[in-house]
Amino acid sequence: MARSSSGRWLAALVFALLPVVTFAQTPPPEPPKPAEEKPPPVLEEIVVTAEKRAENIQDVPAAVTTVSDTAMEVVTAGGADVKALSGRVPSLVIESSFGRAFPRFYIRGLGNTDFDLNASQPVSMIYDEEVLENPVLKGMPVWDIDRVEVRGPQGTVFGRNTPAGVVKFESKKPAQDREGYVQGSYGTFGTADLRGAVGGGLTSTLSARFSFLYQRQDDWIDNAHTGQNNALGGYRNWASRLQLLWKPVDHLSVLANIHAWDVDGTARVFRANILQKGSNALVPGFDQRRVFQDGLNEQTISSHGGNVKADYDMAGGTITSVTALEKLDMFSRGDIDGGFGAVFAPPSGPGVIAFPSESSDGIPRLTQFTEEVRYATHTTSPLQWLAGAFHVARSRQSAGRIGDAETGCGFVGDLRFRRLSRFAEVETERRPPFHA
Image (cartoon, rainbow, N blue to C red; front, side):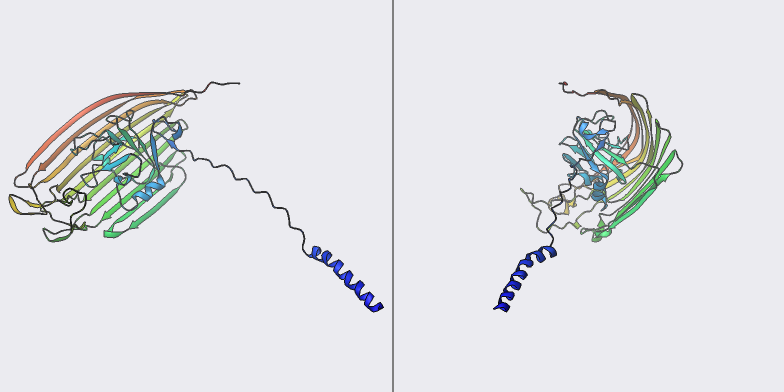
């Protein structure tokens, strides 16, 4: 009995110590740490010059859309030209009947469908503060871009003929920090795109940046009428730009820009009777890689120019001068009836060809000189204003032909003009009353 009693006491002691041992081996869980507070999201500030002064886009009382440098690289990396922006910016449409030249801009449906080389466009293209007046100059390649600004309608402070809006391209400017890049792509039909830039400080007050662009594509469209394979669709495009930025003092900067570009390739390829009557459906057997044409197709453009921009900061504003000179010669020719023969000169096709039409247009010599001087305030006052004058002088020789080589007619022309315009804009901010 004694042994049994001592056994019971021993068992009771073991069961009593079990919770102590358990708690000793498993410490109580630590209280959860308070979650770290994340900083509130902050919108990145977008600085634009839609009113010819650097300001936050949210402070601009106008419809402005911007495209970043990264987005432009993605859009144009495959060899595309400026028309690649069409449909990628709200309310902006860009089209051309000259291939890689003469883009026509439309903002909210406002534009000019006239494809004549004398036609002025109500949507202007501004490239590095330079007004590209002639429509062929607007085909200048866009690369090494810092940002794109689309303002419209209403852009009358940007030279002449801009009531429908403005598309502004700002290239990357020289800086003291040394940097550079080279990037390329290769795709179908031998499409290649190679671009790059290098820049940095030359002295403590002078910096430079050089950029280049090369684009090409092999001919990929067969002409079934002549039996020639890979007859159309190719192009070669070169462009380069050198910029020098001089800042001798804090309140003065002078930026010089020298550029050139060259195109050799196919003009717009027209196709006859490819839609079914009464619908938007393509005709049976349509092949994008095949045409039936008896006309010639070619396009060459060579252009070079430069501009100098000077900014002088004063106590209440900035005086800016932009002086630019552009020279260009071009020739473009295409079979605009899109087929061969005619109903009165069989055989003809595809479909009904009412009459043969092959046209060409050229500018043996174009010289454009522009000068702009303006003053823009930058004070803390709610009242801001700018005023300036814009002068353009242009001389142009043109030559062309309408119709085929046997029945067509040619024309030549010589155009010279000078224009001086003045502009001003006043902006005021209405501030709410202060209540204590």
